[in-house]
Image (cartoon, rainbow, N blue to C red; front, side):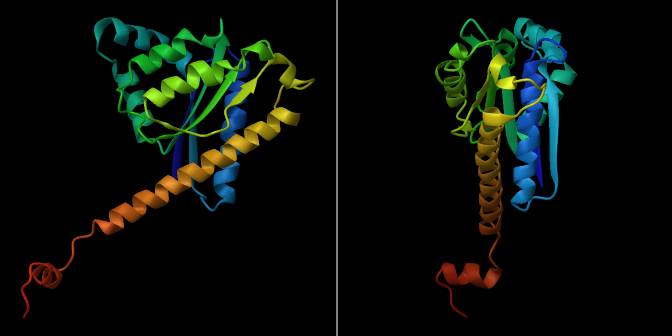
Length: 209
């Protein structure tokens, strides 16, 4: 079973960032199910709905109960999809503000699939020089493929198609593989922590009987 949180920082409703998020979430679910995980739950969360809570947390140092619940969900998730619009060659203030109220250790080794949107393709490198480094600071396990969508990537449809669709699928495959690899590692670690029986403990202490 995999539980994934998809955070999107789109400001309008609906937004191209949300459309990209939904496409990334759907592709990730399909990949996980294709790899044998038949119990996948993906929850998409609009950060715009938490804007006032985030600002209050920054000003007071205390999170509201609903924001604290969101933080808990992010920490507990098996994987995280995070998308943001790009303004002035960087991520949105709302996106960064949410990261500012997260504990530094919240995302350690968390499988992370990044996406961003902007009006033109010239903003695409913001994913690599602005957004990815922030999550490197959090020590998240960011997948190699991050998806950027400019206005021209949407084509004549409101959905994801063509080259954009192939990039989304490639990133989703990397994301799903990383999530399942983490789950297997965790299961193995738990198995290895099983307490040996009393006889084995005596033998390890050099006591024969």
